[in-house]
Length: 291
Image (cartoon, rainbow, N blue to C red; front, side, top):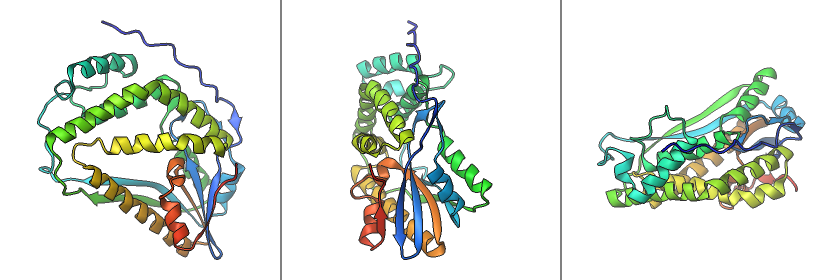
């Protein structure tokens, strides 16, 4: 049965907006300006921030997008099932196929996806269907401004060893299925919240971003805990490890430069036990954008 897609939702954010806000980390005469980024954003969003452009123009260096990849041995985890249909309970699979047909390009193969991969693809496709994009438009703007003002960019890509914890096949399957079910349950709410979050980001509305940041962080961690080769302890350890590493990256930048520009997801900057907490504990001054 063919499922007709709903009309594409109208995106309200189309005009140029005031722009996002900056955090400031200071140590003596050395400063790191941190832009809180947001994804997804409306495809037609045009934002311009004089504050961001001035911070990049006056920087000695721009820290590139922070990315971490997990290195695994070929025998550390092997999938026992061969298709997504085999992974999912019958009712969940039927529901998945209806939502897949509604949102996902039929040219994209989905039969061999892990449940967590299916959840991510479904969410990203639904965003696109509703006029949102999780592409790196913000980073393209940052890199473009850095080139315009002749500011060097320092890449921030790291590879880490996979954890050694053994995860049972049953536990791995249940985590992935749970992630997909939660994604399907929350899809309509996520679309609404994403548009509200994008509007708040473009307007620099810190009060609204703080209200919405918790759900953004919650979904990110749910996705991380759904992968079949990671236990909850592994995820906690990796999050702690990379948060500490990121704080060290910012500290080293303050030593190298008088002025540095960086960008991190808003929900990471608002996390109570996140990178800014580590920098505060180390004696650095952290100034948050005011409401």
